[in-house]
Length: 343
Length: 254
Image 1 (cartoon, chains in turn blue, purple):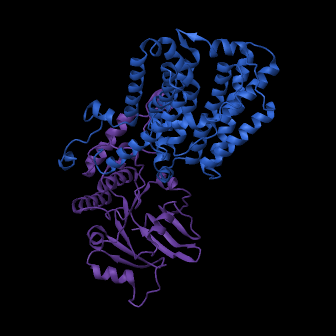
Image 2 (cartoon, one colour; image 1 turned 90 degrees about the vertical axis):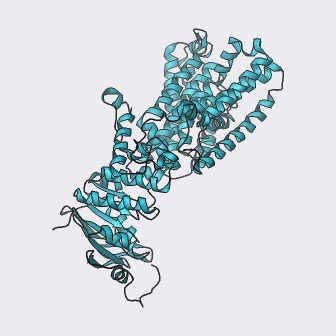
Image 3 (cartoon, helix red, strand yellow; image 1 turned 180 degrees about the vertical axis):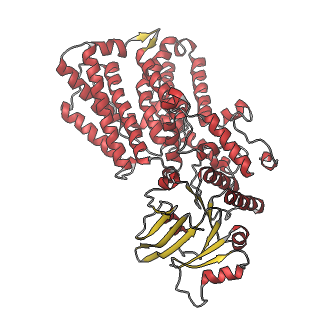
């Protein structure tokens, strides 16, 4: 703080003060990255040949791919101090719509796959816009809106299918996306990575991202400077819905079937990952990188526990504990920062 | 001198409370008008009504001689009118440069700008220049505003308003949370802005500050302008007397 008293000193305009290390330590996502590194190192030491094998690592990457796509939208939503509980149901209903359409087309080629993809994305967009409209215009709290659409979307998926999964994804989808590999890396992971990178650039480098933070940080201030907050919120929930629809197709490709009963905890898992990664549930703060680190922690624990022969149910226990610990540490640091230590 | 920004007979009622009761107000280019009044006199309501933050029930507003209606604060901004609100209205997680350019980001030239990419370097440089010019206590434009002291936050809010105002600048209690040196800086800034030809409206409870910078003082009581006093030669007692009216008038805070 001593710099404040020095007169006529040049005002700092780059964030490179205090060295890169100093800045890195200030980020929640880096602290949690340390946790991930420790977890990987621990399993790596206990089971170097199996855990650190290329096969296992690509397996982990494959397992987080669908959640990663959902986490991109969720990160935007939570930074606005919102929440989207409906992503799992929107994924399901979108994959059901896509599967129905592709089934009706009765072919296994790219034509059907592309039409199915378009239908799923449009379905996701519809649910996202509905969420956004109810949050921004009808002023219903996001928790309630998305709890409602969670139920409605899942119900509609069950009505369409009679509750029975549709097991007819086109072969091209399953062969090329679900099981396909490019240079040894699962295609589905590369697709997810692309979505994450685009989402990260959008969040951190563009005006759209800046407004996302501004709305979560101080909505009134955002309105006063002329940001059309309602429209931005609708767009952000629409993005989350659209990505859930897209993830519906990835899910069809990966599992070859719709997963009507299998997504009931997806929303909470994705929210936990985003929050573990340092995105504040109160809004205004968070990063795409952090969300990805937060995703890999549960996936790594799951895989590691299986390999070293611990019941994988411990993963659930560990993730819950890490979630609470991560938010606790974050709160402590924030309190310290507001006492002046964090500048 | 004809008024740059003028209100005639503004009324606004909240339920049973008549917040503004045919209030008049005027400010000209190149002068500082202080708006004073007891709590509940309608100062903040008047400022909100003038700057597109609040609809009025009746009355007229004139800007540069023309009748005008600002439906949103943004429309007032577009006309060159800026407000430093008492609550400062900053986004605490964003840094000073981001706050200063919020809603007015400088975009990168060419196709990247079209895609929504911002020119952060230019915004930081211009924000730093603005703080330097104001003699601000802000030492970094890349630290989140939430981690700054009260005076620094104030300084960010004022720098933002001064940078964008080119007609009228409203300041609602700008010195309330400040120490001696920072208060002095703010008052100097107000004079500088006035000398550059803007109209400045200062809301303050501090009569010495009002007398130091204001050219004219307009007194609100019970939602209406009850006096306009030339600051030169006026005393604190005179202002307080006008604010409170006759000593027996104690109808309670409206």
